Image 1 (cartoon, one colour):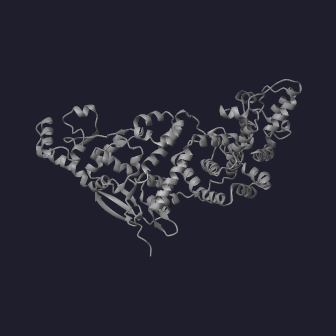
Image 2 (cartoon, one colour; image 1 turned 120 degrees about the vertical axis):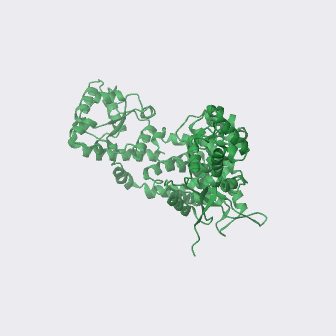
Image 3 (cartoon, helix red, strand yellow; image 1 turned 120 degrees about the horizontal axis):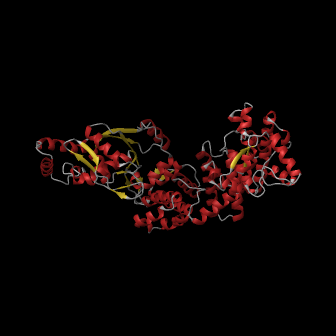
Length: 598
């Protein structure tokens, strides 16, 4: 027999707000910035006053949990859609503070003009104008005597009938009795079903991720410090992008600034590295997977609820342990030593700029692997090699691009059961055999997408091998990537366009090299047969052209660094397809040699 997935009921707004005040319904987003503008709050109040519908709220009831004394605690509702609307109502109607985008506590005062029946965000001019009621919460929260207020308003607006003003103010107060729909999802539903229902019901088509559910679960837990834990995740991710935010936390959130969480992240105040700026979902996934050895965030949601996977019951001991494990994982993630050493490993593989990393999931899993191996006290030199190899292998094979969560779950379980050394060797044998380097990778490099992970790995190989820029005597590829040097077409773009080649052809990644802009400009639109011939002739005579290299041997070494096929001095547009095929093969072999050095 199938369970009833959800129920739909209409409740007065006052009932919803009373549930919030009584802590019977949890609003996860109260712990995070309120993103609505004040004018949007005003428009919501106006819609309610006009009697317009304001959509449905969606709540997911927590399961009943077995307490340590054997009794059961009834699960409270978690609001998973409508947080902003309910928070807006609390701010405007109950005079509650909200946390704005700058993480400051503010009040939003909505004013009402009873004659014009108009709402505005309160400002100093309105506060001085007696024809306005500057804060409607005084009415809706019953902080004023209506008859006295009506008398004052009438005196300020001339000879209007008091009964008219009274009716309009009563109509405003009646907003609290306006119905709002609440869809309550059954506590026994899994995340996939909840997500599907949410998408179907939500008219905006917004999709909630499993990380969103997990963050909601964390934020609404009051027993095991969920409030601080979620704030920790938010603050760390914000600081990683904006170090100047540190002073704001220290000044405004004095309670949090005294916690161990804050002390663990203070190093970010002087950190401007953007190689890895994790979002909350990245931080959550890495912390959870490295500590729990599981990859599915739906498991985290269940464990934080106290789920016993064997008995299918919910127990307080499991919830308590799960929160403690997650806190441990978060602290390891935030550790300055861990974070910086991990990024040092990624840089040592040649990935020195965030633009080179095309898979956040690969970056996340490499950090998961690092944290696991550090905890297991694996030799540090081996850790570096394992992390580099796994990261690059993941990029080359698109390991976490299809169904990342399933793959992450499988990988972490296999590594936990069999050890990294066996798993990495088995995986390399399975996906990076000789056929991959000689056939699979060259075929994958048949693309004109400049952000292709294959081209990024190729650049990392050049950086790792300390290669110089194309035709450069002293400038290295590392500097060209760091300072946004030119990506040059070996067969110039305009040259190929003149001979009928389309963008998908002339922008093939096998036609790209990193070079200095002045060299690129000097080559212009010359055919390879022209400028390579000129280059070799000048070098044979000890003269420089298209750069500062004057020695033929040095020229050949530069060609080898950049996987330039032989005989370029004789190549025209007729040889372009042949050139692409040959260079893909050479680039793939360079990547192979680079990988084997990791």
